[in-house]
Length: 446
Image 1 (cartoon, rainbow, N blue to C red):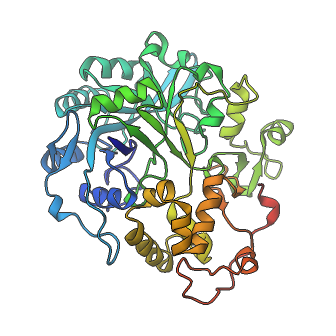
Image 2: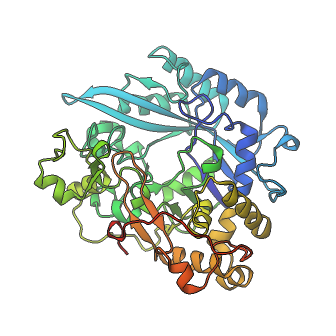
């Protein structure tokens, strides 16, 4: 079975998370996006785990479905998302903060387990280590290696994946608190780690510059705090729909079962380049090294970003993939595509209205972005067809994110739609809109 999985999300019990991230809300948006498997997120939080137990029923081995599928809300006005299976996999994220090799380490790790009994055993052990109630993503003084050992002991069949491995502040290779080698983090249990989550600010091309990562599968997920952000990164499978087949597809890292990943253009990630957001200063690694990693405007330390760290550890000039490596699809979320066309924000009422009509026509966001033939899109909306064609070909304008500031990816230059005679609506019904803020062309590169 072909399906799409987003394996890193958060519940309403995580900080800065939307209250709409209920199980029903997640299923509703998963159908709009075209996702069939969702991580539950946050099973370590007792109140969320109770809701998971009360609202989910066993489905395929190690997966669960919503008990009351008739109560799923309509999240887009006038649009009924195509029905289909949406399954949950029990997951959690742990923020491990501890001393290792004389330095303070801050590493986020993802846990996946096949049953509630395993989740309960893990929670009982973690509750004896620290506070698992205050946040859906608990902060614990627990070594990553010891967390992995705990999962292997208490959750037969479960596994651990280091999360967003390049994020400066909380990750395996983070510039602020990470390691240079996986073995430094997981020690004698390193061989029990088989996958890494790349995060929004890196992509497989960047990771495949490092030969030490060759044996690891690379997964991508949204890490969303709001259900409308589901699938901004995701994984594509052609495997049996169950926990163990999905796990084995990731571990096998073979195109036949692990078809590929959907990626942000990494420049859009909020830690791609170096910089200091307070001073609105974005720098490439060479400039950072020349400045001694200090902001020339205020003298404070710069945040060293993902590209810089990848370059520090890289031992190749070009990425190297195996002959059956999963494919990579760099995409923009559809609201951002429509936003670029309309010249208004992706959360605006105008964009939401156009988004609803596109979903109503093509069934789901991923169906449009990945599968619908370009000629079919062009025949329905020439401007949307042109946008999707550019995106699929990687012909985008890029302004990189830095120090917690998201970057900007655009499909059309300033005034280009007017020059091409294309309307600023996917339907061609509205007069051309004026007044979009100018973006300095110097900030972009092809």
